[in-house]
Length: 202
Image (cartoon, rainbow, N blue to C red; front, side, top):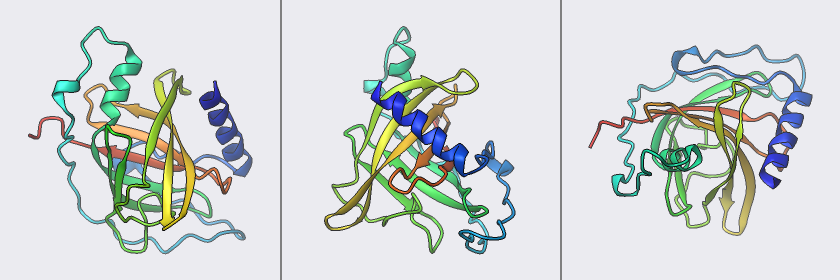
């Protein structure tokens, strides 16, 4: 129930700020025009070439075929991902990130482009304070099961903020993860993430 309320608050904040930038997937990301006033986006950098990493899921912990959809989604999210993130407030910026959601509740995240952190805020150092939780589940606008989570953004020793992970959806072939990151301590629009991994790689 608390996770659902957080999701509703996140949607309300996003809609109040303006239309949510939903770019779909892969090459469909587009850079939106910047507003006349308000925060201005960074100049768009050329995107580096990248390939999906091996998902690195543990097959020994895979849920059985008759497991609940929530159990399957929770297992599928815990993988090594790479792909694009889009900033929608103040125009838009697109950058490439590498993110691993560990089964033990920690995560590693790095931007593949200079001038960015993987979650736009904070630093990309690998520290024990970087944790994430899958707090619950809901149905998104398309009726697809999505995960609702929270994540600790690390800025430096003793300085963290807790953000929200909204509508975490994994594709049927387990190769794509889409979600929105809501920096709830600021109340700005969520960032959109469209990530990939290769389930066939060893």
